[in-house]
View 1 (cartoon, rainbow, N blue to C red):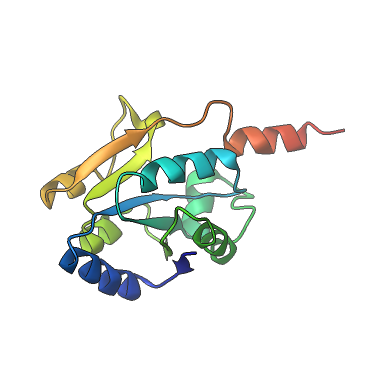
View 2: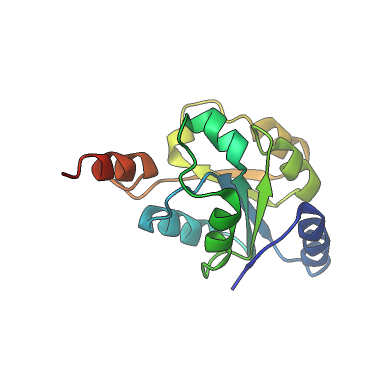
Length: 157
């Protein structure tokens, strides 16, 4: 089981992984209302390396990017839930709009994002390429999204 850790601790662990020649995979997102689509995505991400660190967008950033009323679940709770999942080595909350600073600090071997970025600009791509990392897009499990889940909940009688 993983842990919810600080960026400083994540950097220490990254250094240890590098010394052991282990491959670090990193992804980030809001992960509001955790569902099986998230789990499928995280399992696929973890399969790409020896450890998976997950950046969790903080509450102000999630509200800014997702809109009023979001997140539904606070960042500390989202990080704790993610860290409890088998594929996740560690969860780190960050407050910036993009993951550029956390990527620069950790320099993971592989940066994973969802397939919805295929054909769209990925803000962190240049950062990852600058330190020699690899970007991989993973397709989402069809019909599984937090927005879709919220819409189904709102439609309940």
